[in-house]
Image (tube, rainbow, N blue to C red):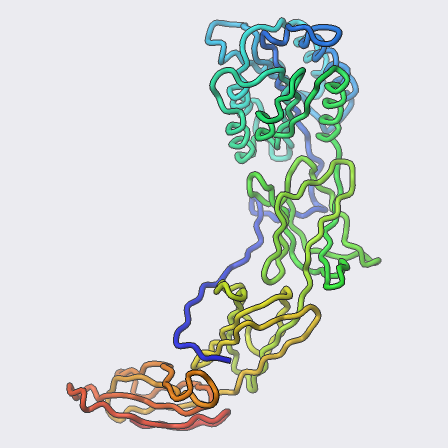
Length: 460
């Protein structure tokens, strides 16, 4: 145990994040409407032959069949944006049009519009994505999904990846899907969203079926907070799941175990990549967690914890600052005579006694109860017979490295003739000078001893 000369610290405040003023309660979420916007490539290259027909007619035929299978879904609306065909005056790089607005019974309209178009023009992918801001009208209970079907790369100087990232961060749509027809464009489109390569018609059909199913399926997960034996026994802590792209909280709940001791099952949106934050002390964090659609995902974090208590006689409460070992980062303030629960690891501790007490490299082991003793202070009433300026020092003794030196404790104040302090047991010196004297040779010393639990008066 060492005593420090000075103390500098900052406190980390951990707060529950909410959206629109309300916490995310898993059990209270209303049914959500999924809006799927198909962004369809009708540029000139789509007229090229591919498999049994042109790329365009093949892509329309497969999509039409998938649309037929979606009819009757009460929680689904679809829309169609097409880029490429020249329909009016203006530059080719702005030839992108919302052809069919979102609606529940517009499947026939979408198929009819696609069948009536002819490919022509260029490929303004970034511009088309930017237009989706107005396509997705405001909706508080909607999941907005973009499915881009293309056979080529951006041709108008835009940056689809940057546009996609910005719109995801703005909450316009979730991470989009891209189907590349006839050529592998993964390197260019992976940064934009979830890319599927369709080298042939069969792969194209499979990709679309997978994407649509993924967009509509629920996913389940459980969060295992592991003890020192690797068993998911840790619980009763606040957990928040954040959207990794936007940083906004999506789910917030107190972790629980069911009657069989198994973490409760969570129903999650599989189109979101999550950052999981568990409010242990210090917090646990696991980033970029992907939930596989239609399957049960287990998310595991090592949450083995131990217990710490500061024992002090009497009713006086002393704050104890807990820091991550070796970092100086303050993570908690624990009052004396209370029990705290911490992740297993090394910690540095500052106890706000007078003078300060430091416990360095304290190891908290899993499932172990560690108790640190804080000596009971004595009470010193300092009386100034005449106003004085100066400081109080503690004489360092024993086998400590500082033995024989003086540890500064506090100042005395000339405008306070009577001061009371609670000091740790030990020998002290007051070095002072009366304010009525301007000579340094008039400096004086006053020695006194403090015993635990006892009161003394010291006059200067």
